[in-house]
Length: 301
Image 1 (tube, one colour):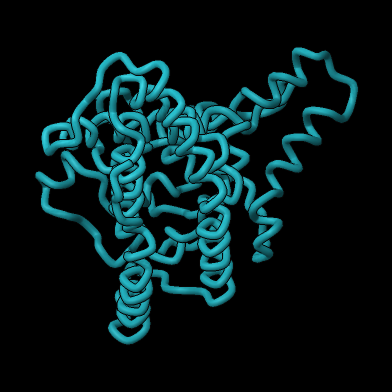
Image 2: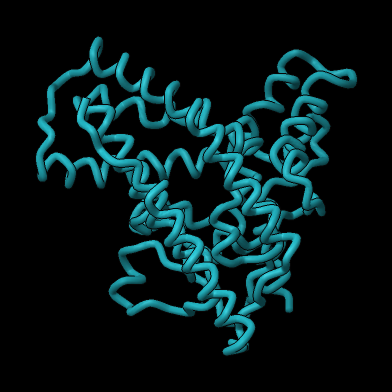
């Protein structure tokens, strides 16, 4: 097993320094377009991040075992640990992340853990730390095709960490736009602000990890609009700073919808796999419904 470093742990001092610099910029420099930090919200995000790191020790063991099992028993090829393999893995991992992220918005079972990251009504570098406590135990299924191809599990875990590290800096309002060529290829603060928006036009858009090209290829790209300021948070905000509630409130709501009331077995199952907002009585609204209503209202106005 190659002994690659845990770059996320090494990056923690960088995270702290970057947040302090952003805090200084938003309070002392007073950037007009930046909302700034709210103490309780930032502390809740940091608490979620710490919980994710602690639980990550257990979930990463599970992930490593699953990746290794597939690699040792079912791989089609043996891809060497060399520079060109990391180039291939960069694109393969980013594609895996895109579909994981997209399905996490389109399937409630995965949304139950991913909603944590969208629960803040603020957008700054501390929001990047607001990570799930449960998703690491099952979201790895989207990466199982990589060891099947022949990528070594240690390489995969390293590239997953690189992707997570990249996505830290895009959680800010302090950077308005990157150069046009960069915006065209890579995920940026502008693209990711859209992803965190609860505005109907921004819902379930820009699922990119590092490369925004996947959203453009698969039809989920939405640029940040000058006349539509991003409103952060959820369509129905949870309004709590309690880390335990943030981590599990959607699990509770999902299981309550699944197992209570008079419903068919099919409808109970659909509450697990349908998108957030789906109701068995037809009264729910999905993000696509809200977007269509918004676009129609714009046409009438």
